[in-house]
Amino acid sequence: MSISVPAGIHRDVAEQFGRYFETRRIPFTVRPDETVGLIFLFGENGRETPVVVSFKPGLLDEIQGLGIHEQRLALTNMYGTFSEALNQRGTGDAELAGVLRIESFR
Image (tube, rainbow, N blue to C red):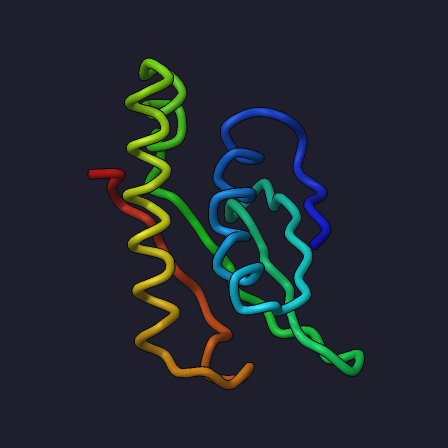
């Protein structure tokens, strides 16, 4: 696992979503992208498959304004959306590749 995301809400989301790959023992990296949100790259044998995660404008700022308990709940809820979307795609690298937009943390 390699997370190249500065501290803050983006890093918190990157770490939370990274658990999806960690539990499946899939090596990955994640980096921020100013225009999109987060880009997860995973794969083996020199082939990297991207999963691009974007967020509704203002969503992460809204989460950052919550109390710590509410932030954790929001991250958990968003992880559920993330993992469910990837699980529906399949198990192959090509099937997991794509773009995911997070609209809500509830």
